[in-house]
Image (cartoon, rainbow, N blue to C red; front, side, top):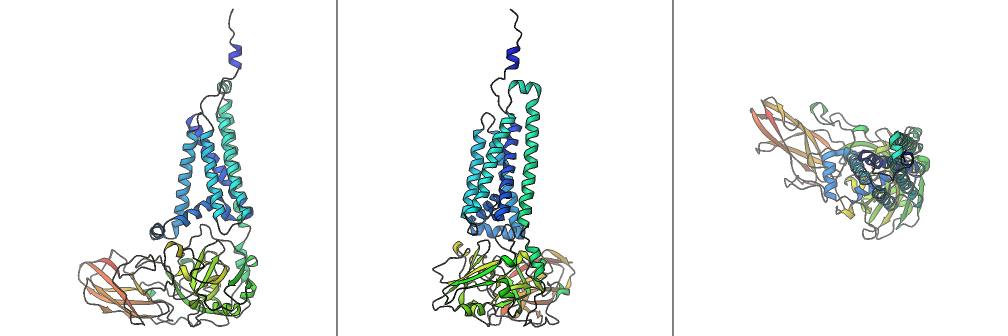
Length: 521
């Protein structure tokens, strides 16, 4: 009897293996869907609940201090972008490999995506600035990732009849396209929702901050910008920024408050209006990051407007035995400042609302930040500050203190050569060298320069503005043709001369003379 073959042609065979490229694509698309779903839900709750950002923040917190220092030194303000891009590459590669391992069974990829989801849940749960409801974001991410992976894997795994007609390819491509579109819409939606808390508009609505006590005018001769130094006051867009925030916190003035509590007689809570409606004071202050290497760029000067921190502490009534002002940012970052420095009215510690004639830029702490002259930023400059606790050093350990950095953190006397640049070529004969020096809260008394280990020569100093700001300097040196080195050192008003001994930034700031090489022709 003839065999028509009809039953074998119409009956589907057991599913075969998924093609490698399809399996890998299943993993990558599931990753995109997971991240987009998490970002969408985070947009409704808090942007830091996005699993991708939470894991990135967790990575920053767990990274050893020397590695962080290397990242800041190597990538500067782009260190966080480098981290996020690196994470993205790793996630895509691992997802593709997990998908490729799932050609026979959905389980390898599903397990890897589940593990990703669990890491996201743990990262969000560990964030000090998020509450339990924030866990909805990584849970949504996990469910979306696994669900999309299973659906795509099913669409990519054909029966023989479907394969013969090309139905499976069309089904897989249409399903994949739907995932791409849905993920894009979810990601954009999450971003729009996160941006709906419009801190920029809130900042604009603040208007002009008019100080009752203005800073003295910057005198003529305060800088030598025409000779190669920076301008005396650093424009906001050029002011250095070093922090742990992967995304700039978006805080509206109407949502902001400052709680002052701990070892005080009276706990206080201030709204933005409570602070702004006080008589404001303006001060010209130079700030320095402890991550600044010898000759580094992380030092800037601005006119800050705000209120005296000592006034707020006096209103609360600091109890005897208090040692530390433990400040917390809206994103959970913490800092510890010596209470004595915060209460010292001669030092001029501030809760700042404005910077260089406008409300604080978002990336520099809007609505409010601490500015305490003479101390490195990690103990004196909490941005987006929302809580102040008066306590002891033993009771609370701030973010960087837990990682081995110093407790008191006074800024060290330093100087830097800005012109000529390292390895520049200049004309032989008279060479003008210019730069900056700083010894905040002590003041710069002198700067000296020398060429090729020769005798030290006195540099000309700019007009001093105050002891909490940098001073510019320049000197004219005579050099023959050839390669040369020039070094600088500063002396502060206490009589201390900047040490030649080289030390890294950990635990309390770099030391050493800044030296550059140049060629004279």
